[in-house]
Image (cartoon, rainbow, N blue to C red; front, side, top):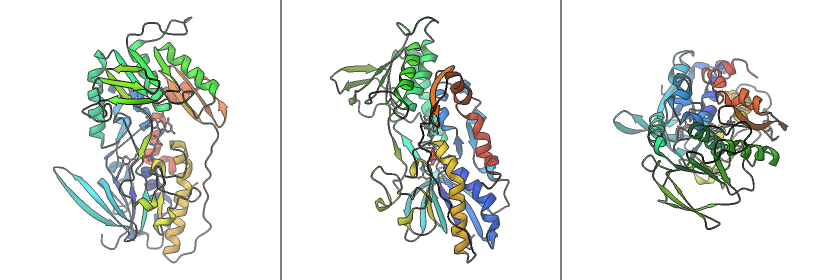
Length: 414
Ligand SMILES: Cc1cc2nc3c(=O)[nH]c(=O)nc-3n(C[C@H](O)[C@H](O)[C@H](O)COP(=O)(O)OP(=O)(O)OC[C@H]3O[C@@H](n4cnc5c(N)ncnc54)[C@H](O)[C@@H]3O)c2cc1C
């Protein structure tokens, strides 16, 4: 494969898997000498998951069909001609953008080895890790399953749960746990008195769900109260003892003492830090990163201009848009077209103009609260609870991932 021109994609999730399909369908076959190109997808996990489902999936394997929730990556690409695609199970540990190589720590059974892969084009799609190991593929699929397993063992005896963070991850998790552990308040009651498990959300914001307007956020609080969740606003978690509580497999269900910025103290049988996420960009030179750790990306073209030619970034690791699946899906055709254009030009062929991505910044966020209620807005329009349930709350977008992972979503060049 020494003569291959590698199009290396780092990270096998929404950004990486979609980019790989798009290029294999619409770019590589149209390049002069297309057989000399290989799309190389490098990912720390051999499976891809429907990440938004984590707040419910963490409770029990019965919540979702596991074969739809966790999907093996390599078979998804068997549809392409032999040699066009290669999957590498491992983690990028060093990007040398000047020499145009990436070093990958291979997850090779017992032994761990490093491989250096030269690239003709590179896409960074390594996403972001959450503080809590319960919310995605911070490591591989086995470590996520192990985290859920430890959490589930502690759940039946937990009497108090504290969740830090009033964003969608914290609110969805609180709603799911509230309903699962406490049930609902009666029809005419607006609040569940004496819930079996005390569940508290602590947020520094003046409202939960800061992306949504205040009236929607306040409905979310009402729904949370109905499943026994209390919200403390305008308050930060000041100290956590032990400090690593909730952030590692070993401390996932450690009893935790918290002090809040207003001086209050809380004791938790389980503490879930659900605020912030850290971009997985530690392997990239600091000169290419924004202050928040994401790759500094041209938001219109998705090129990482400071890194050199044919280097791109998409998804939560990139500054192109707010972290969300819908931004990624909207940007894939633009990224695909611009990569194709750059590859054509590099091959001495002619190519059209750049395509330009524009983020849709209208109020858009759907937040299920338990298995029958939810709040949200789409493109600036408030969405009623029943519709939030129908679109997202029923199965947390699992209805969308089949087409994304198989590539059917990208059948047409759009
Ligand atoms: C709990 C939760 C709920 C969410 N709900 C929604 C929602 O309802 N709607 C919505 O639009 N968005 C939602 N999001 C955001 C959405 O999940 C992300 O925007 C999306 O997953 C980002 O995709 P990505 O491809 O950038 O990377 P990620 O999904 O973060 O995946 C990154 C991949 O790269 C791999 N990787 C990491 N480091 C390396 C490395 N060094 N080398 C190789 N591989 C690496 C990881 O193992 C992983 O497979 C949610 C996020 C969370 C955490």
